[in-house]
Image (cartoon, rainbow, N blue to C red; front, side):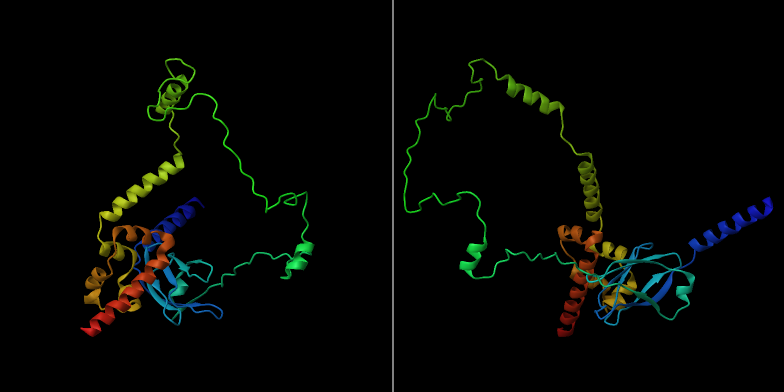
Length: 277
């Protein structure tokens, strides 16, 4: 019994090691939804950090292997994660269904005080508590004189650093200054987020725009999705390059869809300019 357990553990270990060295191959799939366009949806392989975009028919192709996790995202749909299995690669075309995102509207309450649009009736139906503005006569104009300032006027031209009570030192101001030296109002969470953002900015600036795009998207994305020729990819990336400030925003995960849309529009403009030449 003990030997069988050891053999079983070794078998699992071999399978895991073998699975980690399985080469990724192109997986063809299609996104299906009810009565809504399925074009330009993001299909992102979280495991390998590559992405693709669906065409007009919702079809896509992406390099993957079993146990990889696909993340499908669209503006009008609920995001979905799908873990691939060996059976998915046996299919001619993997079909993934998305649910349409339902936007709930705020509840509208109808009450007896709902306005009708007729001013005379609405005024009568609105209840007013207290005197309100009944005692105010808008035709009567009142003029008020300024009160005489009491006490010694403040000399704003030469402010005094001494205390107002005549003593030589303002101990409250001195105490507040000392406390500010030793007590720092720092939010640990906010500080850690700031440090992380600074590191992210340094990483972005240390690489070129092309490097970031090749890390984010596969070669298949540029050739088949954007319809850019293999030899034109470097020139296209130079054409689509953006300032570091904008790139920093687009590289955030929540702006993945906007980045793909930006590259799609740039690809169309790039191909139009090449046709004119």
